[in-house]
Amino acid sequence: MACEGAGFGPFRDKKENMKDKNRSSRPPGRLAILGGGAAGLAAGYYAASAGLDFTVFEAEQSAGGMCRTLSIDDFRFDLGAHRFHDQDSRLTQEMKDLLGEKLPVIEVGSQIYSEGRLIDFPLSPFNLLRNIGPLGAMNAGLHLLSARLAGRGRDEDNFERFAVHKYGRPIAKRFLLNYSEKLWGLPCSRLSLAVSGKRLKGLSLTTFLLEAFTSGRIKTRHLDGAFYYPEGGFGGIIDGLTGFIGSGRIRTDSRVTRVLHRNGRITAVELNGRETVETDRVISTLPLPLFISMLDPPCPPEIADLSRGLSYRSLILVMLLLNRASVTRAGTVYFPDPDFPFNRVSEPRNRSARMSPAGQTSLLAEIPCGGKGAACPNDAAVAVRSVVDSLIRIGWIRESEIIETHAERLTHAYPILETGHESRVGRIQKYLESFRNLRLIGRNSLFKYTHFHNMMRQGRAVIEEGFMVHSS
Ligand SMILES: Cc1cc2nc3c(=O)[nH]c(=O)nc-3n(C[C@H](O)[C@H](O)[C@H](O)COP(=O)(O)OP(=O)(O)OC[C@H]3O[C@@H](n4cnc5c(N)ncnc54)[C@H](O)[C@@H]3O)c2cc1C
Image (cartoon, rainbow, N blue to C red; front, side):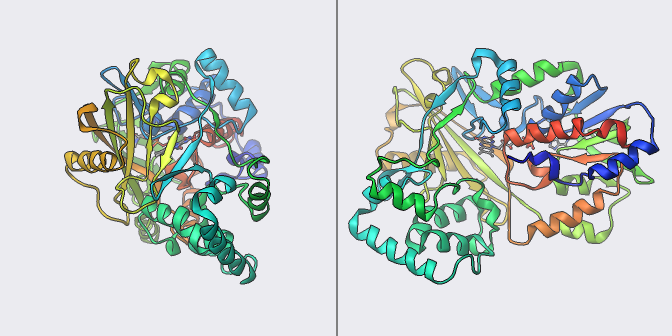
């Protein structure tokens, strides 16, 4: 599998690095890593391994960004259901070395709640057929056939066309289009194909038919319910990384407020509007439009315009602490139906028993909001109530079982991948390439729908590809 780190963002190719190598023999200088989420800590981890001089500047009180785990009484919650994907053997081994036995493999599948039933996710053909019944299956099959006859690959320039072509409208609508519109806050006809991530990988017409006609005896490879998950929450990985880096190199409560530059180089960053720190090189993981807005002198107006067109979806995370042993058996349950305010609900205990006290459990509901869709509710109590009412309605919980509720807002949860965003982002990145001592990594900096293991690869790539030696 190709390493994402090799081809993302404003990175220069090997030939350019060789040119730099010949040009400069300066020793590595001070490196400023902006943002202490997974990407910033990844850069810090590999920089520390390489013995470099660096500081991570993080705005919040603690590092970890979206990969943190919160403690509420004796309960623990990730900021949205997280799991560690085993996609890169070197990285997996490094994380195992860091966490030891605290990083077990667990096996728990996900499901979709649709029309009162639970269906395996990613969509399992056998389970799907069993749930939609023979008539539903025939209707879905006819639509799929007609979508396929309409032409292979034709008109697949947005997610709606892609999904309808691949699965036929009834299946696409019920399981993919409703869900995606809820998650991204835009009609699927305005969403890029990139929103599917790798979720649809392996669910081709062939695998569908194979599994359906063998009554599920031949399970196809897209059914992947096994993953690594740290005991006590995904934040265990963050604790491992911060422990390795050392707290002296991570400055929390240090919000970058200005990025000063001169002659094609970033020269300093301003923190909290009052302190200026000089730097030789910068790795930014900050949201791309935020970084652009902080440049001093300002960027050209056309770049500022392009950047203002990029936006992010937020999540309201509603946490319910429950006085009962268990609610579901799934890792995550997806809710495509527009009647539910949330797009997914997870039960942290099903990932690690340490997420709640013995005999008690919890639920975490994710409500997407903001960006280009409906605004986020201002009142946390309204969000909590909407979740509680929905879960009582479907019989998952009773009011009397609720010990406590809590809500958190996660801004910049998802870069909104509208059709055409690649070219806008590409033009901004092209402009930023003119800064010789700057690299961008991270989900919101690169404006990509991508995951923790890719943050680690990006951090590794930027340090190991010679940025510190060849970019002065
Ligand atoms: C609901 C949800 C579920 C997910 N599930 C998974 C999963 O199962 N598996 C997986 O691999 N990935 C998952 N991800 C993706 C994963 O969380 C991200 O890929 C990862 O957290 C991105 O890290 P980052 O460092 O790029 O961004 P962030 O985590 O957003 O970190 C950016 C950091 O920069 C800081 N910052 C912002 N502004 C400033 C400033 N001005 N100055 C200084 N610091 C600043 C922020 O406080 C933050 O700490 C999920 C994401 C979400 C939202």
